[in-house]
Image (cartoon, rainbow, N blue to C red; front, top):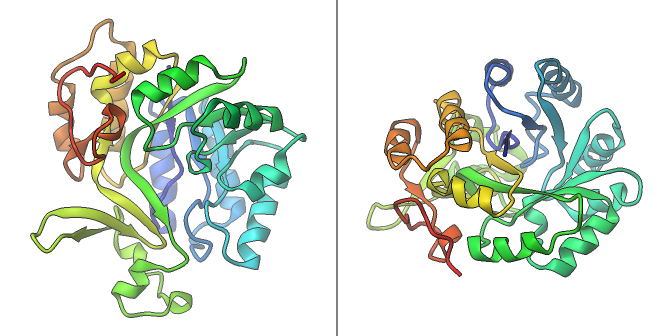
Length: 302
């Protein structure tokens, strides 16, 4: 299996972003997704900066992939999407149907996780449009993925979101701006103050969700480190790890060890507790509520 780093979902200062990807070039990652996938107002990096980072990573032996935004809300957002898909230097991850429409029949692309491909007919249709890789929806059970993967069209790679806060929803509203009582169009770029998102707790004080601009994430860290052997047995080609502000190289090292191991490591999850900004979960993979954690080397539910 290959390891992929998903697109950066948070808003970090420009120099922080450059330093982060310079560090990622030294890790055993195989694939790195780049570009702004959440909010068109985030302009610390421009398209030319992302291309510079992509070329640096390519020279380090990684496959760069340029991701498009999930929710296009403005003329400028649509223009950015067109600019991304017109660049033929790198593979594109299409995260909305507008990007798929612009790529279909013209060049290979990655069908992103928010396209919600839940059945074999949808997968065959997307492959017919030119998808060379698909990313399974975050809520998909392991047992469903096993069945669907067995029916995938020939040559289509399967990627699974294996680590990170799950991007569960996108909204026309910006919840971070609302928290600061600011209008969305004059948000002061408030989300740059929260390098791993802003935790939202229940009335009982339990961390429940994370606000990240227009995106709502899980508060817990989706972590399939225990399930790597089952993912390999199911024929999954790529594991996606989502960026976080601290200890990302350590997280990558743990998954690199897991994919190379001859047998499951029962201590891997415990070791990762110090690397994660919140508690772990893997409920969706095991057919349970997403915030639950099924411990031990998992059997995929059938």
